[in-house]
Image 1 (tube, rainbow, N blue to C red):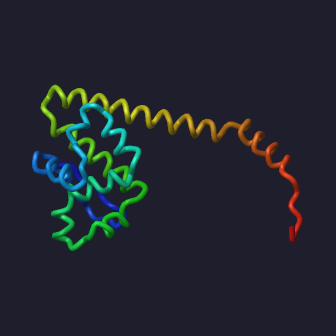
Image 2 (tube, rainbow, N blue to C red):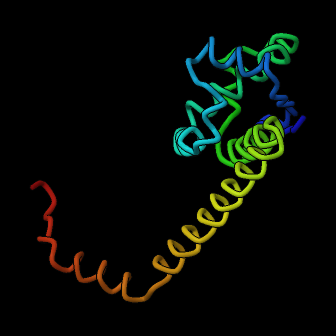
Image 3 (tube, helix red, strand yellow):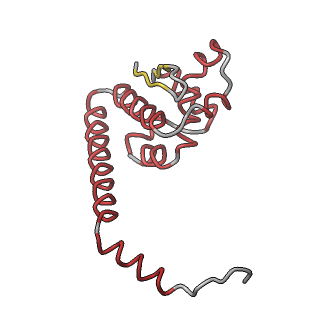
Length: 150
């Protein structure tokens, strides 16, 4: 069982088992078993709304006990909370599978994390590049002057 904290500081637990897979499938028509092929992980990582819906279904019993609605849960999910929830979900998903599939999924998850880190590093380098600032300044200089009232 993995845990994460939302933006209000509430800690949530994610446990993936056959019952949880069935609940997600019935509620959202999302098959967590498709993670082995990799497409589902890509979908979850690129769609924070779907990700939070899946996580809410997995945490729904805990939310009901706390009197937290789906909307309240979603309001507390942004930024670092989504990142923490993503990690908890994906790590728990890896642990759900038998050893052979678990190894493949763990490798895929490690590759995904490495790719994300490289993409962030590359974007940061590009933004820090003085040539970018020069290009932006040149583009601004080419814009027509705006006079008040026009």
